[in-house]
Amino acid sequence: MDPLTLTRPDDWHLHLRDGALLRDVLPHTARQFARAIVMPNLAPPVATCEQAAAYRERILKCLPEGSDFEPLMALYLTPRTTAQEIERAAASDFVHGVKLYPAGATTNSEAGLASLEAAHPVFEAMQASGLPLLVHGESTDPACDVFERERVFLEQTLAPLLERFDTLRVVVEHITTRDAVHFVESAAERVAATITPHHLLLNRNALFEGGIRPHHYCLPVLKAEAHRQALVEAATSGSAKFFLGTDSAPHLRSAKEQARGCAGIYSAHAALELYAEAFESAGALDRLEAFASFHGPDFYGLPRNRGRVTLRRERWDVPAIYQAAGAELVPLRAGESVGWKLAGASR
Ligand code: NCD
Ligand code: ZN
Image 1: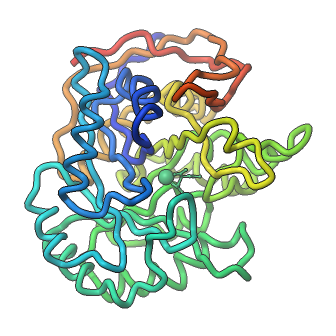
Image 2: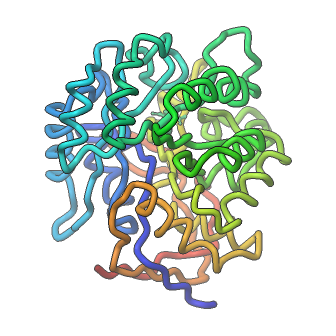
């Protein structure tokens, strides 16, 4: 088992941002992943194929020399999105999904949907073309308990949507609860989910260990240990419905360490290594490859990668900060260590 060689993986949920921050975080992802679904929650949002094409070009320009990393684009679903735009997206070879943000649910979600009703023609067009809907699954009812938001959204919003649009393909993004695991497991094959490394490794105690810990704050927020265990079971089960999506979401240190700190955990610097730790703790390293490299492309109807990556069982120290956009970015495990190290990648 040592070292560990896998088919080159992909990241099916990633925030790359733009400008100088994009330039400085992209190499972390490109060194290990062949492709990534790039989330469209810029301000203003990446809402049209034209905007997605332009964003894709900016990403390609920032790639390190010689990298063959391929950004897979997603459109941001706004109240102004038309069925025609969906048809254009489905006919393109670079848009692979449409992201639903309930308005107010998370970072840069203000341009999202306050209600799904008006978007029914869009869902119609998506289900006709097979373009998947990527869902931030949290209730935005301010009265809803923050730890219940995912379950409530799935029950009250996503279940009726799946019933009404009965061939719509859906990825429930960054699931965090046992309820979401059961929801996805018992749904039809057209419903899948991504799981982050932080939700596999941390429970909500990590938010308060030795004082309040803004760098462990993300959305959906970390949950109780029983939920973490259900996620580990799902990820390591071998079920093709669950696949890798880091939700690596860089925010500068100054924006995280605030009276109202931003939500988002930066994990791109050690993503695959952190998943390896989680799978190893569950005694399931032999299941990592399918989760990281097979289930995602199979769901999206894309070819599996041909290259390989090798991980060595070697402890390394994660820096306390990375320099990014001329400022400081605090990564997951800052100042601590990771037990696996990426040793190489081939095409
Ligand atoms: C993400 C971000 O910062 O863009 N934050 C997060 O906590 N996950 C948005 C998101 O995916 O919810
Ligand atoms: Zn995200």
